[in-house]
Amino acid sequence: MNIYDVIIVGSGIAGLNASALFDKSKKVLVLCKDNSWNCNTFYAQGGVAVALDEEDINLHIQDTISAGDGLCDKEAVEILCKDGFKEIQNWIKRGFEFDRDKDGKLLYTKEAAHSKNRILHAGGDATGRYMHLFLMRENQNTLLYKSTVTDLLIEDDICYGVRVSHLGEIKNFYAKSVIIATGGIGSLYEYHTNSKSISADLHGICITKGIKLRDMEMLQFHPTAYIHNRGARKQLLSEALRGEGAYIVDENGKRFLFDYDKRAELSPRNIVAQAIYDYRQKTNLEIYLNFDNFTKEFFKKRFPTIYFNLKDLGFNLPDDNVPISPAFHYAMGGIETDLNAKVKGFKNLYAIGEVASTRVHGANRLASNSLLEGIVFSKRAVDDIESKTFDFKIKEFSKNEDILIKDGDKELKHQLRVLMWKNAGIIRSYEGLKSTLEWIDDKLDQKRGKLLKLRLLTSKEIIKSALKRKKSLGAHYMI
Ligand SMILES: Cc1cc2nc3c(=O)[nH]c(=O)nc-3n(C[C@H](O)[C@H](O)[C@H](O)COP(=O)(O)OP(=O)(O)OC[C@H]3O[C@@H](n4cnc5c(N)ncnc54)[C@H](O)[C@@H]3O)c2cc1C
Image 1 (cartoon, protein in one colour):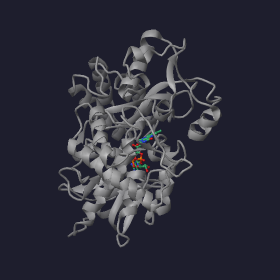
Image 2 (tube, protein in one colour):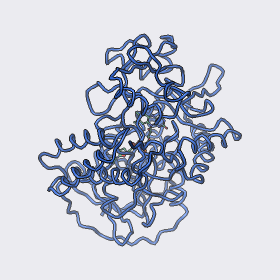
Image 3 (cartoon, helix red, strand yellow):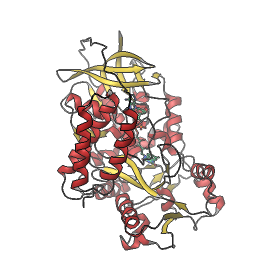
Image 4 (cartoon, helix red, strand yellow):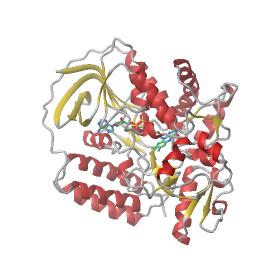
């Protein structure tokens, strides 16, 4: 039997940071669905938000709470900003190198709705990739690739391990503690910026086990993505571009955002995304990101990833305008946890990072707070597990698993994405949500593969939550 002290599902910032922090005496297994780098962490561009000094912590808390539009848990936000300040210092001590100026001083950039420049970055616009590489180098635990978790082994509200499909074989892995760190829900939407490994499987599994999801209607749509590239994952144009002076125009050169909010490009994300979507619907004009404020030299140095990705797509930056659209980006809601990342109502089960709902983001995430959340709450989960002694009795589960994929699932998966984008996207209506719910219920009645069923269940939960919240709040916009 495969028995571990801890199983961590997911190799993004939350999962790998937890893996790095466990005492070396612990037998830890890390699982990921595809290759290790196929996660949202790897693609994070802008940076990590962190208080500039002890005095700035309160302002970071206030900015987070005001972006969250009344839905944040104040205690959770205080933990995020206070512990986050300490943990980033620990990362620097551990050897992580954020970008610095020629005198060695840390470089901080600005992103929307932050009242100060407090975003640290690495490799210009490659923060996530650098952090992921750093954690991969630190990792000393077994990391099993191509391992899709298809079930949680739970009985009487106690979690004993996970069921995994590994290269076509079904296996059970057992542990004293299981940490879910599987990220968000990106590929439920037609247009999204997320890694292809992010398809809400664990959210769906939680629904089947009676584990509570919270705030699932609170989904962040990034205002500036280039959506004409092939492949499901759309090319993000980081918020830091606007922080450094890029601006949004229609095809006639009009900066129409001022008609929606006087902060224009630096309004919170939900406002910019909703404004772009609304303006396009009303005028049918193409919308662009303009880089007139940049020199080529600065652009290439500060945003090398975006420069080369867009060059491959035929753009000459900063001279060309890039057509943009909002795209699904980040899930504020998720598995309900307490402030030590424990899944409420279940023993030996934790959730950290984007998959969890600690309510640090409320109804709208403040830019660059999510890498910080992964760092802070992975540490809290590790501390909680390390502080306990376990009287663990193994319980064996059968390895029977439903068929994961059936003929026709792929087409339905695509139809679901289109419907979710259209009816459970940036602007929602009662009728659109209701008709999509009926479509989903119909598909759930059919005999479909388990992986599609998990997507359908999570989508249903998003829609049910959206229907329940009748008034617009933060990222949830009802007409
Ligand atoms: C393009 C982009 C840019 C971003 N930029 C920033 C930024 O600048 N700053 C910021 O703070 N945030 C940013 N974000 C958000 C941030 O990157 C994510 O919220 C964060 O990285 C999530 O980390 P995580 O560890 O929770 O999950 P992820 O990094 O997404 O990792 C999830 C892991 O779970 C695994 N997994 C999923 N399902 C299963 C399964 N069924 N079985 C086994 N394994 C599974 C995946 O394989 C993966 O290893 C950005 C996001 C995107 C997409």
